[in-house]
Length: 302
Ligand SMILES: NC(=O)c1ccc[n+]([C@@H]2O[C@H](COP(=O)([O-])OP(=O)(O)OC[C@H]3O[C@@H](n4cnc5c(N)ncnc54)[C@H](OP(=O)(O)O)[C@@H]3O)[C@@H](O)[C@H]2O)c1
Image (cartoon, rainbow, N blue to C red; front, side, top):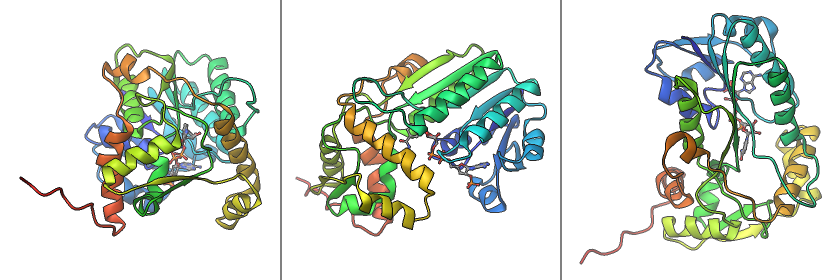
C-alpha cells in the first residue's frame, strides 16, 4: 500500500504527516525545498511538485493506493484538487479522504465559493467513481485563532464571524486523527463525516474559554465586513476573488445562528472531541508564550 499526503505542512495536513512520518509506505507532496525542510525527517518518500502542474501530479500519484486530498481556499482549488484526485484514481487509487467543509443550513444563507469549491470537487470525485470516498466536513478550526495568539493574550479576540452565531469550533488535531484513521483502516467509515468540537460556542464563549486558560480577561470584538476589512485583506496580498469568497463565507457564519454539532470524532475514533478549553491550554497558551507574552502567574501553593 502507498498513501499520498497532500499539503503535509497545511493546517490539518501537518498533523496527518506527523502521524504518518514513521511509516515507509507514505509519500508526501511538497512544493518547494523550504516545504520539504519544514516537513522534516520522514521514513517514507518526499515528492517535490505542485498540485497545479500536470507532470508533477502524474509523478506524485504513480502507484498510489490511498490519498489524503486537501487544498487551501484559492482560485486554483477546484482545478488542483480535482486534478490530483482524478489522477490518483486513474493511477489505481481506491481510497480518497478529502478535506472538505461543513455546509451551512437555514434561512439567509448565500452560496459561497469556499463551500462551493468543496461541493464541486466532491461531485467530480463521485462522478469518477472513487471506490472508497470519505469527505471530512469540519466546522471552523480553532487553529484559525493561533495567528492572533498574542492579541488574544493581550485581551482582544477580534473576528468577523459576528456575535450572534454559535458553532462547534473544532481542533485540527481531531480532524487529522480522523483522516489518518480513515486512510489506514481496513474498512473505513466512509461517506460524509461531520466534525466539530463538543459544544456550540459563540465567539464571546470562546473568548471566555481562552481567558480561563490564559488567566487574563479576553473580550470578543466584532469586526464588520466593511470596506476597511476588505482593504486590510487586499493590502496583505489576498486576491480580490478570494476576498469576495471569504466575505460570503463570513456572511454565512453571521447568518447561520446556532450551527449543529458533528458526531464524526465519536463515530470514527470512539471518543469525545477535544474542547476549546483543551485547545486553549495545550495550543493557544504555549503559542502566546512563544510570542513573548508571559504565562499567567501560577496560583500560590498552600
Ligand atoms: N480554516 C477553517 O476554519 C476551515 C474550516 C473548514 C474547512 N476548511 C478547509 O480546509 C482546507 C484547508 O485550508 P487551509 O487554509 O487550512 O490550508 P492549508 O491546509 O493550511 O494548506 C496550506 C498548504 O497547502 C499547500 N499548497 C498550496 N498550494 C499548493 C499547490 N499548488 N500544490 C501543492 N501544495 C500546495 C501549501 O504548501 P507550501 O508549504 O508549499 O506552501 C501549504 O502547506 C480548505 O479547503 C478549507 O476550505 C477550513
